[in-house]
Image 1 (tube, rainbow, N blue to C red):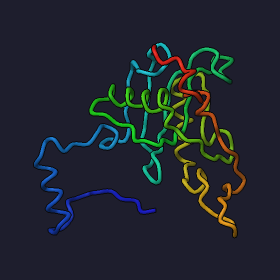
Image 2: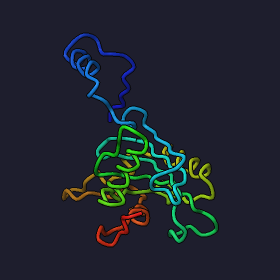
Image 3: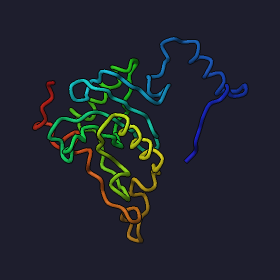
Image 4: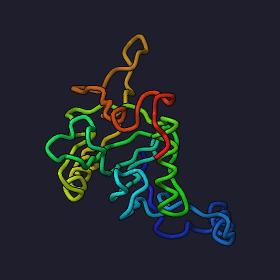
Length: 193
């Protein structure tokens, strides 16, 4: 995997010419997440009672990987004892972005809560993929740990055995926590909030 950051315009050549054309056309713009990598709303779109909500683009290798913090509804699996803030890693089959923070979270709602465009992934420990916390600040700290442990080679099956079958990453288990948040069946989800 190549890590890339554009610190300056490339030297003259075809790429430079193309970037100049993009720069000169105001209609060629990036979404908030593509440009800033993180979006926060004090009054969220998907968070219970429109509480705070944070989404960060972690990687776009293979699929799109996001870190997500939001408040979940009472009765959410495992949310006893006041643990109503969820930090979760989301592997998305589609990109989530928008030109405003509100648009980003509406796009996430449509992609994950309505169209179920998320994918399970592997973890080596339960808190590699999600954590329920007492406060937004605790969930943000948990998300930072999830991001620090993120390694795509440990989250997806990519090695094959002699017969060509995909092998689970070493010492891993399939994490399906996203199913608790987003649901399994489009027809059984309550979409109007």
